[in-house]
Length: 251
Ligand SMILES: C[S@@+](CC[C@H](N)C(=O)[O-])C[C@H]1O[C@@H](n2cnc3c(N)ncnc32)[C@H](O)[C@@H]1O
Image: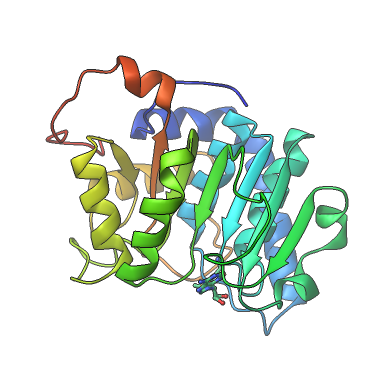
């Protein structure tokens, strides 16, 4: 994986949209067709956050991606599409239910996807070692977050995205989002979001850019884009001075 600084910023995301515009257009067309061919498939990841995930994977070229929470495999197909377009990388998905195996296109899965059915907290084996990108969209309660903050994060040197954090300006008490934001604050880890509720400026600027690039045609109907993105990059973090929260982090 390409080791880059420890920040996802709006400027970085904008530059990735320009750099990968054509590939992203093809990926969106393919995801639209995939969705049409599985009308009963539940698709939770919204367009903007799926596109940002795709672009970060294109930039970072991870060797190993771990996804926790796939349901019908909508996010799985986005992740696999980025790896396929990179021409490298492997995805391990964990979920309590096995629906994703029925919907993820075999052309994307073949040779690059491993599915582990079970509770992520108790699955055995080394599926959580050497992770370059961790994608979390599973149980949104505080207890689940406390599990991965305590048991998974200390061993990570990876990019991370967590879904369903910003459906409102601030997550409700006793939620995963609340716990993760507390951890980010305590560890002075900056994060990015394009969530309409939390970062209206970033959401609007990316909306304008997508229109300019001809990328605004919808794949999915959701508009909240509540995902957050950050990096736990130990080599960089060790050198970085401990700073407080950025007063205007999403510009
Ligand atoms: C919100 S859905 C995922 C949606 C999917 N990422 C998408 O883009 O459509 C959450 C999923 O997390 C799974 N899940 C919940 N708790 C889990 C756990 N402890 N371990 C593994 N998977 C879990 C659920 O079975 C469900 O399929």
